[in-house]
Image (cartoon, rainbow, N blue to C red; front, side, top):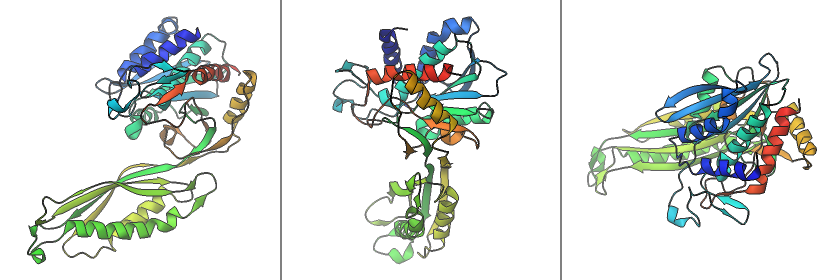
Length: 378
């Protein structure tokens, strides 16, 4: 495939506004790109419907009897572009300026997905000695919906090597933090603000819980993991009350914890639940509920897949990449299992989720070559 067609393919993916929905627009473009190989039986396709207009794809090629199973993973959804008037170029136009391709999802992560698709297409024509899979997932930005489908169907259980094509800004990651999204609810009793003794102030109870919870989790966020550093704990959404002259009967906030193997999800949940008992606001009931929980993932920085990536880079004339950890969450949080060699590496930079998100075109093209070499150097 020419560089021009590879760029046009990426532009097609970015021009699909898959903001937490409509991933089938990307799926249709991928299937159309791979149709010759699908018709020839070189690639096999499995669809996992999630919701209307949202389908996860599992593509496979290579030796179905091989014990080594190398899987590539990429998600088709993107986050909101926000106020489009703030963008220098329209977020879904996929315009190129000075070697940079601009658009929502350019970095996170349609460049990595497009590179993996085109490399997979080329590899399907080679005599492979391994099983090769490509996961195209929905809803990664919300709660890894597509990865959960794949895991539930057992389609990652035999994967020996997993490469997540997320943008890593010039390094390879072999570890990532875990996550707890949670909700704390305070239920009290309404009353006139001139007679507060007749009510129970839910906001007072919520604030008391916040102080108790932050104190309880402070020892955990102080721990330093050798790969992932310190865990974090933040409150990001809060609501409560009805009007200024009424004692609020209900209030809640939502928080986000990024955990590590040193400060685990279990440690945090125990601390948050224990803080409930520390709240002593008469008449107010506090409830802590973990909404989404994914464990931290940590593998050897010199695992077999990392070595293969570095060898592939040498083959295409590129220098080795440094290896470090990721603070974000990827589909690896759901797809990983012990014994799997994991690497997170892909084209892109630090503009993920930002206005004027962009990806370097030359870097994108280099990752097609890297992925193709990695898939075929067995």
